[in-house]
Amino acid sequence: MPSPYTFSVGDFTCSVVSDGVGEHTTEALLQRLDGSPELMRDALERLHPEGTYQSAMNALLVQTPDGVVLVDTGNGPRGEPATGEVARRVAEVLPREQVDVVILTHGHGDHIGGLLDADGNLTYPSARYLMSAIEWDGLMGAEGRFAREPDDSYFRSRLLAIQPRLQLVEGEEETEVLPEVWLLPAPGHTLGHMVVVLQSEDERLLHLADAIHYPVQLQEPTWSPNFDAATGISVPNREALLELAADEGPLVMVYHFGFPGVGRVRREGEAFSWEGVEG
Image (tube, one colour):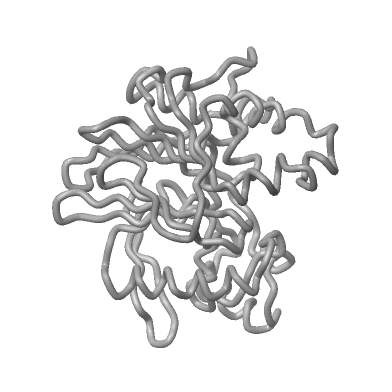
């Protein structure tokens, strides 16, 4: 498991903390993406000629002058040997009690599972929590996922545990979490999915979370994984975010790109490419 990767954004100290890194075959990826199999196969062979690619789970810890922010919490203690490491990696950087804010970009298990530890206690006991109101309702509302699937107690219990400390993010505009830390709605992967923007001094980081999953989607942003909730929204939002990243040049982070998932998006003809840092 990689050690935290630390870098700066202005006077913010950022650390990517890994919840696991896996190697997968491009042949399996073909079954996950919605697009022309022939075009996708050609693009994957050019991008990953060895036939495999890395997929990681990259949580982000940000130390600002106004507080400590954690973006997503990983899978948590589900007994999976290759995951559940975020809390341990955070503790390598600072005591977990020093985390002031936990942002949940969306409600999938690999982002919310680490809200509680193995004993059922809050992993970050001093934090307040933020999630999209749309996302919360889609999970915990009367017609939400957990109303339809009440036996899915592992994740439901985590959301119930943070409810007293939870701030629901409303609306379609940027929401300031701390000075120079914003949330921006970017629905599609889920209906309440959000991305995170850091701006300190003259430097910026755009954390795309799960707005994009695989580097091959830079070649053709209309290729969506079959677990995107609404491709009619995820595709134009992904295209707009990639255009912003390429044209304005901020550092970019992606939750599932190979560790540490930090780099820059470049234009490559009518498509895009990834210039990643070495973790």
